Image (cartoon, rainbow, N blue to C red; front, side, top):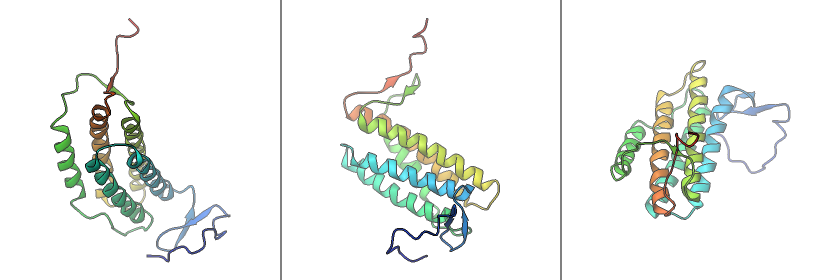
Length: 183
């Protein structure tokens, strides 16, 4: 691992390049930077979600996921390095099953919304899907831990389920898509 930053600006990126975790330099517009940058963006949206009023168990879960995403971002910034351990996907699946068990079966699509927490969770879900697409794109040209793709795929599913839980908890409820509104 590299050194911790004691000085925030270094001017080394003024030429459009950035340093990877292994010390190599690459363009700021590279697929690798786009992948770990989008994971970082997802982590920031989860930070917004953690700050919203909600159940302490969900807050704790989201903070743990933030740590996992930081590991994933570090892994993506160091080609050939693995930080996301096996088993994280299974953890997400178990948590997903637990929260989904108490929800009614969906009969219509849900529009992103609800209260502030549910709406922010929907935003996190869409950023997670974009992060997944970026990591898949990177994996087409470079070696990427397959667990990273699986993790993001399952995380977006979990965020969908959590948005449903949050919409119920905040009293606003889910907003169902009205497919007959124009008839």
